[in-house]
Image (tube, rainbow, N blue to C red; front, top):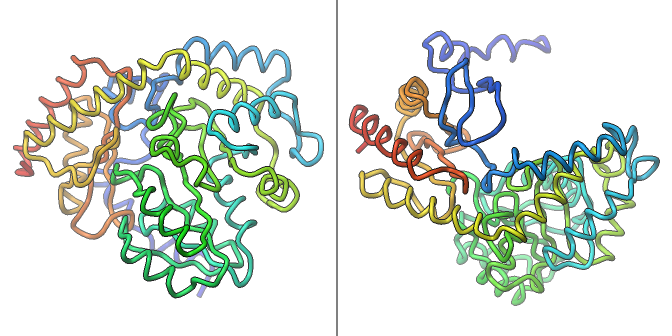
Length: 392
């Protein structure tokens, strides 16, 4: 065996490319908006996680530019050493107050935030319990931990309780996505909290897709259910509704203090660029001052869910702006992507191993800034392709 043998054997993607059906790494040459330019062609974006449409908001861009002028483009070091700026401290104070926790800590990406907290907080002889549909960053963070990883069936509280019963006397952390990134459904947080109390477990909620979507001023799942005080750790990312890059962890001050001194992805990574920190602060301010954006997001969500259902599409358990269309086998998903791409619609096909075989998805996601005309156009094109491929 030679090290690169596995690379030589990987030919599936090239085969799909040769068929003209490869849907990944598409190059966009414009700002992230409801319409983008792909291959010099105007395309309706139905695959973005910019739920509130803030990536091109003038106030967000102005804040980012002002931060570059003041601080430069980077910090040239980790927060632990020379990379802590006053704007980092300001952002963390704003985040903690916004999500209702004592303290917060920022990471360079949302993925690193999950790696950082899970690999640090759960130690040898302790347990991590995750939903089987949790994000990859939760799984990878759990694997980096010295604790033991246990997984329960998606949103299945009976299965979760059986697992908790087996380890009732052990130190443990239940980790769950607030909104699941492919299914578009919401975690059963009230039931999870009830079980956590019964079996003496801590709870962490990954609000990557919930920030800007759920809760007062978009503050997330815990606030949505009125359970902020019951949730121990809240994680969020800046790369979706917050229109930037980075992530954060919020919780008790003692936990955050511990992460500052033991979280390797935090200590050994360069700190968040000042422009990113400034844009997040601006985005949160907009969420608070323009609550109608979230209202509009839900109007668009309800319109598209209703439209897809009336056509006969299977949207599964979706209840948020993430609306998957279950289309069956992989080639059907690729063909649907190709037809829609040629017709000026940007969507994301999801295939195994991200989903079970023969249950491939077309993942659509919607923004507050989509117009009724854009959504009506999209529905017309989805009806046309659904009938052509005999999905509906």
